[in-house]
Length: 177
Length: 444
Image 1 (cartoon, rainbow over the protein chains, first blue to last red):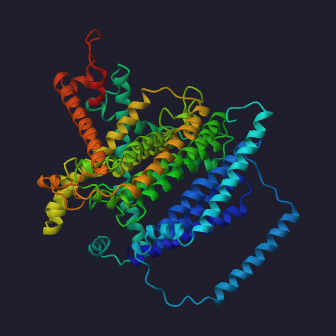
Image 2 (cartoon, rainbow over the protein chains, first blue to last red; image 1 turned 180 degrees about the vertical axis):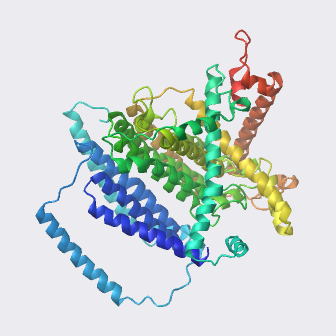
Image 3 (cartoon, chains in turn purple, green; image 1 turned 120 degrees about the horizontal axis):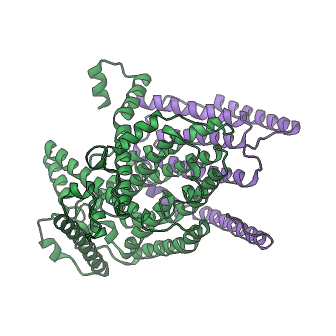
């Protein structure tokens, strides 16, 4: 791909992520927040794609955009009473969030100012990071963390199944149980 | 190619020019192709439905009703674009685009021919298509949610349930195929299956053969096709998630659905059914020959035929999807989820284990050439050593060749025995005349 194309796409995805990230913060409607988050995630996925980290981009889409976000919206649909549930933050929450955000911002700005980006390097070739190497690393060098993560997921799954079963006993099953 | 066009137009290459170029390419080539396919598929679906129910289907606009979708499209464009008063206007308007765009992006990695893929270097092509198709659900859920309508929300919820659960067997079935091939790149998958029907992945081991069918079932559900069309079940939920939509936005959902059917069928063809390769390995053989001798015209012609073969295979799978819609009744949502979690998921997990064991313990076939296969050299067959894998593959290939022959014979028989095709599609058959229903469907 020509550098001009890369540049155009980079600006497009960067703008998309930035604008929708602001929308995530500004919007008070939870579903709209989730949609804005979708665009942020897709934009970041696009940036991964431009860096030829296609596997990471696809994982970003399938895990965050395709899985987590759908579950968020699903949760909102099942729990909220009014269709357009609004989020009204309390004053204390706003203060805590702003102070946390400021700390984070200072850290990021400091890190960016100190970083030495150097001259722009040649982008990696498409097949520079083959997927099979990634798989071998996951099941070879990093086997223990990988298996620990799956044990964690298993615990979560059993817990969820237990909670769902406990509730099933004292309530009549609706359409979606 | 981009540089060539810029030079020809005398434009300085820059971000803006590139952006305009890409947008123009998408608008002029990509979008019309997808739209055309969707329109054809909608017409065809109605034709199949008609013939399966002893009706004719659309037959007034254009020859055998081919232009019906165009007429419907014009009608939908001129219709009022309604938004319910209490809907979330922004999300309501956004949802159809969110449903349509991902499907569109999935065409990026589909291998239409050896050199006819939009992004052939995509190392994770298969995974990319799965990931991008998962985004389509977002549009459907938002549509249901933003409509602020009880039935729409029910539809959206069902879609979310169904999609999140069926993605797992879908992915696992694909992994079974990928294990047999050893690559996620769809173009490479095509090259690996370039040696005739016995090298197609579906016939490589028994687990891949079974995964072909589990993939098909799971893909039906993830595409919300009948019998898994609960998100829009018209007999219960009015029209499900798109109840409140009208005009062009309504049409967008249909375009998305039919384009997704093609993509899903395309993956199935590329992964299990040999992609762009014909059953005799001629396309793969001649492509290699022409690439070696640098015969530009030859490569182009082979590619053209390959595109034809690939599209035919994908459309054949879409056709089976249509068949099923008019054959099977719709289960309840709990039955759908039961079928996924307690039936399909265990089956695919067993298949995954089996395929892994097969890769570990059954030796690669030494005799069958995978790369330098020549359909004219029968001596290669004699040299093949007899291993369990080879025997299984031979049996499975024979089943496949038998099926293929049966289908071809059936279609030819239907064509010869029936009346002229055009007549069959336009004139009603006399009621007392007995026509085989299957033959009709095969031709429609």
